[in-house]
Image 1: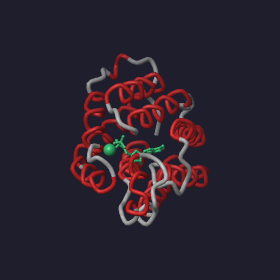
Image 2 (image 1 turned 60 degrees about the horizontal axis):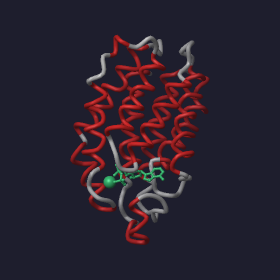
Image 3 (image 1 turned 135 degrees about the horizontal axis):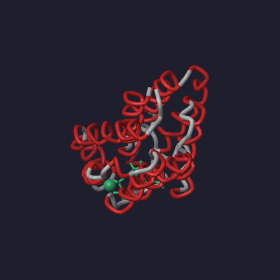
Amino acid sequence: MALDLAAAARWTARFAALIEENKQYLIDLDAQIGDADHGANLDRGMKKVMELDVTGFASPGDYLKKVGMTLVSTVGGASGPLYGTFFLRLGAAWPEEGDAAGLGAALRAGLEGIQARGKAVVGDKTMVDALAPAVDAYDAAAGSGTGPALAAAAAACAAGRDATIPLVARKGRASYLGERSAGHQDPGATSVTLLLDAAAETLG
Ligand code: ADP
Ligand code: MG
């Protein structure tokens, strides 16, 4: 499947729908270890993204960069700049040829942007716990093509999300709780799994 402008727009539209469906769930997760705004933050941002006129962009990369800028300016909190940076870097690295390895490199650029900005590593109980193994799984399966690689990435993302439950948070608002953050699933790891699910459904 071509990784063209229409594909990028399908991905963001599916992500926006999944965020809307799971808005209350994400709010409830953030209520446990944060300030109960993650679902509302992302839903507001993705609704703004859905107002963009996709036909006005020259390339999928340009569109995804604008998605990132829109999220930076509308989502707020910790996750706004982090999701925004992800999409900015993703758009900048989006493969012109639409090949599986190129998509993996773009996803990794997005992950590196999140880590450059937020300084979180795997084990800190953040979205990085889900996204980093997802990108690794993508690369490991990229030889089989975009579809199998995205399916592997989504599965690894969900496993990384689940693995945040016992962890003590070391980054973000949840870290203020110390040991009391253990026993709760990280909201950002949960939303980024929806992003990978959306990718597997629309780009695979
Ligand atoms: P806030 O914490 O400002 O209310 P959100 O509730 O929207 O922002 O997002 C919280 C999520 O952001 C957390 O669940 C976590 O996954 C992610 N997060 C917070 N800080 C970092 C960080 N430094 N690096 C990566 N992800 C982070
Ligand atoms: Mg919050």
